[in-house]
Image 1 (tube, helix red, strand yellow):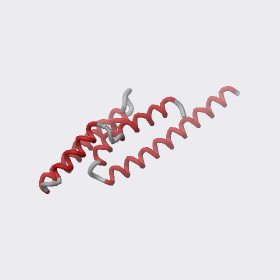
Image 2: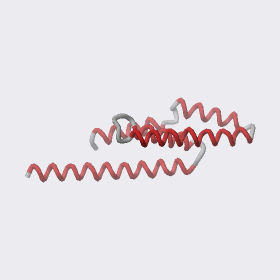
Image 3: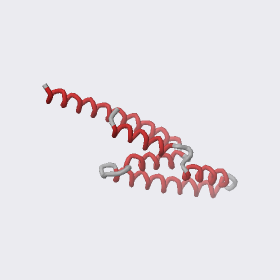
Image 4: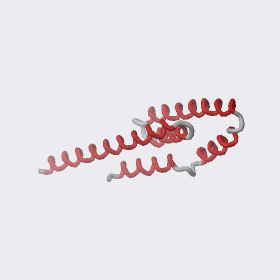
Length: 117
């Protein structure tokens, strides 16, 4: 596992941590809002808008230097507080990203071995 892949794994773990202050705040707020159905619906809409915006901003940041994937997974973590599909999408994206990095590293190693011969 190269340094980029290790950094990406660390970023993902940080973004998914249940100890993230934002996730703790959302969990507390959700428990309080369960008392009023209309507030619960408004909360779900707000989570969808905020989480979706964070995911889009993260995707824009991916090709730029910085924590693009961390922001994407943070967006999915926000969405995952209310939507089960978001947790499934995040797990799928993580698996695909891990496969890509494994393929990329193997390809790079083959090129180095070919160039050294």
